[in-house]
Length: 237
Ligand code: URA
Image 1: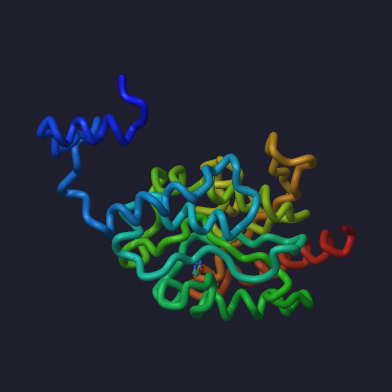
Image 2: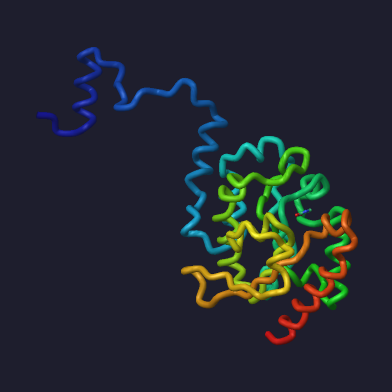
């Protein structure tokens, strides 16, 4: 029997042992970069544990997606985290991808005008999109992409807890109201968004996407009447 570890080690050395085998082999392919990445991953919370937007940003940045490979910047939100109004668009375009901010291109400028027509400033609204990465060539998001990123959008709703959600365009409407019906059929009425993670349902209104209004100005009249419905509801709250 050995009195101490040192005695035992001395005995081993004198017996000619100069190497110890680990229980797991060394991964010679693991680079420093990979090691750092897996260490960073351990600090990222799972979706269910998240209750802050900045934690959600880390999670989305590390979520494997083919869109991320072609996009330049993550575009999650702009505006006020305390806002009672959440506006949801489709996906970042080229300018949004470059700046990392939603609705900063031509559609965004129209959105700013639409908001100011009902005395709102974008800095007082929470603005986001269904997808946080730009689809290549600004193509329409696929149903699979919408489903893939939906939990992150739902999480934003649960964190921000807005009183009203304003959906811009078909993609946002499909994602939140889960319906294939056209905007023409859905607009003009209030809906409710419910979740087990929310204490109360959220009022939802649907309208045309500003990029569509730029291409089809005839629909601006309807969009204006949707904005007035929105304004009325904001004033009731
Ligand atoms: N279109 C969108 O749906 N979102 C943006 O951020 C920009 C254009």
